[in-house]
Length: 207
Image (cartoon, one colour):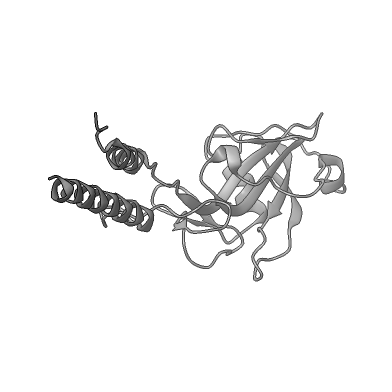
């Protein structure tokens, strides 16, 4: 008894399943990320609140890093050993104020300024945004309150989606299938044509 031509059909089914299951690529964004440093361990932690809501204590260390990432888990941390004692050396405490050490890391672009530190002396009830404004003007914000530029860098853009080596760009929304999807579709069509050709050939070979 002749076995049915399942090989092409099975391959066609597998390719169709792969086409449907192809995941969307993650998007990456270029932006200033906001960090807070554990003064005991020196570890950086991605801030859980925005700078306008965060109220650091006297002796705090905060960092800002410009870079590209899809989310907080993969965001690059500020570089450098910013310690409060070193950054705020020569800035004595005063009643009604507090001191916050800041590390500003402008990233790795060729035109980026060098990283620097600064000690902000601000009122005791000041926010992290106030501390940043005290030492890193001019600042640029968007309408949603996102920090777009620190000391004027970058000159344009604000949290825009980009393509980089660390994370592949997301396909343009509503613009049709990505190139890989077209390739998979072409493979499916090729296998389908081969399967149809095999069926016709088997029919023609029958007595």
